[in-house]
View 1: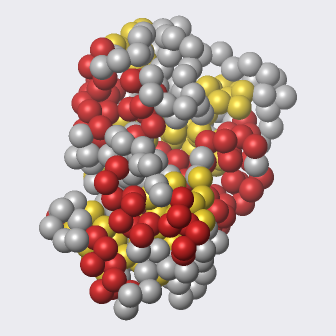
View 2 (view 1 turned 180 degrees about the vertical axis):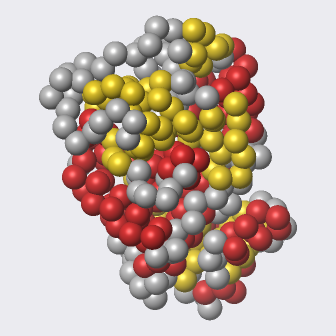
Length: 324
């Protein structure tokens, strides 16, 4: 089978394609023929050696995929060869085959295509964990989503609207904001053209957002936090801007606010049943048409480096997938 390989930390363009032996499942594992693999910003950081967890070298990057079961290991029940499944694994998705523990897989819902199935695990899982679990967003509250046109941003918009909240989408271009509007955003803010604090003041009547969904970091975190409502919750989801902000702690004191960390990967590993319950709720919302994952581009396996570079350069709207 062919697989993308990272042999050393550094430039994305150093990734190579190699022929490897077919995978064999161990006890409790399932091997899947990958039809599509989701591309995420943590994949960029992992290849560069900048992510919180460094897998042993060499490794195959990619951690969410959809495909058909190829083989099951000893002790596995509920999965059979040929069955369409959605999977999540720490590494290994950018390949023709992937292996994962059976508990990291779920059957694909009838009627769902492989591209969509590969695009929901990490982005929607992260956003549900952030918005529903960590922030406890309530109907009628207001949520600001920074970097709103990205994969996790669009997911957060849709989840916020499914809950019954008012959503302010902030992004860097009018084109991206048009996509946010199509996915349900109530208010649009172009933070390349507008003063973020003034825009939030106008959008909330001076009260500020109850929840800030922040996968961007960099220069936008502090003005967003300064605008937060009393008892607001600022969700630290990631740092797509490349800079980890140094926030003044007095802001949390003055606003009675909380800064809340969001690490979906460890949530999945430490609270798997809670994650499965979240996925079931989201699949129900999808069936109702409340969640509509946007897959904006497909890349061949040989184009994986380009997909990751596009992600690093913030050229991606919604989700993109690699299709071996």
